[in-house]
Length: 277
Image (cartoon, rainbow, N blue to C red; front, side, top):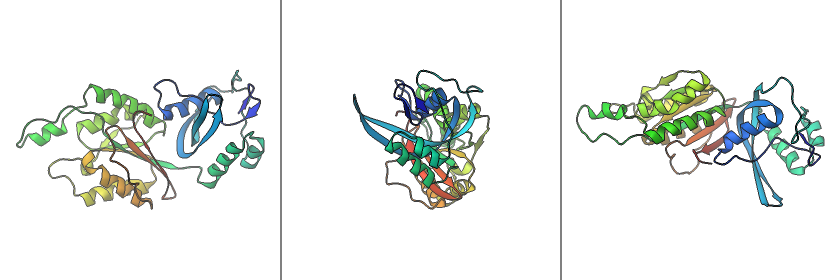
């Protein structure tokens, strides 16, 4: 895009609004500056450079167009022209070496990738203070609390940054409620998976891992929501199915998620996001 204020050619980018998540910023800024609606693919290396206020860092993703805000681009004070160019011509047009480096990184990997998102459920009410045959059913029925319901609504927006995914959840209410707003937003059902449900008689870890690995290897955009108790095994199996190994990182907190992008059955990228960033 061409910015008349600087008379330069660069990529769509901008500042986060107060309290805005970086994923939302990325999608919003592209829409505002190019009139294009996009979903995010693999992350690219952030760029840093000095500005008058200090050091600026910009996060980038490969992205796929899914529609337009308007039928025809509307020039404005920030961007008066946009151009679609082949890579070699884009490199010549770009005003900054850092942007050419980013273009080279984009061209070095697959353009089209498929996301597998592994999510820990949002905040839920307290565990039932009981034992006996009814305790397991009471735990499965435990709902999200007020904070968790708000987190589920925010997650619907964050997860939509990656487009329309199949939604597979533990049968526990706290898991299905976490992904219900996203599923409704993108128009898919919530599929419950007994293998991912933490309860007496649950599937052994090997069976859970095989199911997660199969979903990862399918190449179908998929969101999995599960529990602290089994997420480590599911994440490890998903990475392994794509030829990778999970990073040595702390367990997911409630509402956090991993996004594994793959192409042709191989892991291309992995990024982790929480509700605040």
